[in-house]
Length: 179
Length: 186
Image (cartoon, helix red, strand yellow):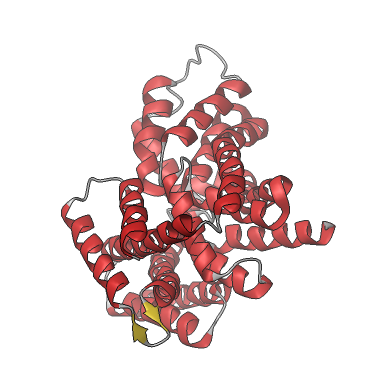
């Protein structure tokens, strides 16, 4: 049991250290984690993403709590969340006096431009993984889910102000009625 | 801002950030207006410009942007303890809400309506992630090299199962090389 907590902490510590660019950036690391540890499948992770988007608070924190709770109960949730937050707290506390200067350095700015480009690719991969389960069955296109996906995506781009939670609710209702 | 009327208490830091945590959905950019309202307008812990600076630093430090911003503001107010209380405040509502929700969801997860609902939700999540990928891509700096990094990191993970950690480390190396290559050219 102690071993599970240690693994939870180190896995989320790694995610916290390498996920650059906010909540969505942690998703690729969680996919990797699920595959490596067998704690949850990609489909289950997609459900956790949905719940995390529909509840208050930063998505990354919500997901860490969710995964931790699933794997090792309430304490697991706390351990995973502390693990996710620890690297940035340590980094900020250690280098805060330098931080203002460091982040304005041209070299650091360049590296971060590249990292933002990398993050787009990493999240696109996470999307592809979820899509393979929900929109495709192997190499076969699942027609009804794809049509729902297309309609939802178009609507999302027309009604930009509508909060994600509404889209998730619409997804749930559509699922019950059509799938 | 040289005169401090009253010293901020650790409890105030915790409560303020817990309130931000409860009232924002989605994290990331959607948190900025709430952070500004609480920290700039109500508590006067930072000016508008400082807030944007903290936010920029929060984005460039690993981890969750909103949490990083909380850590920085907490530190500026009350040092290390301030940083810890502000961070704990930001995280607390998520911990409480998700812990309760997780047990409820796990209990109903075999119900067929719940399963169908989640199948539909996954489709909505796909569309939401696609939207945020497009949003991020639009915001990213545009040139061939960045495009290659985006496509390369996608392909390395998707086709070869590369770990995202390696992708990030590799990108840092590319970034450093690109910076010095650019510099020597000038």
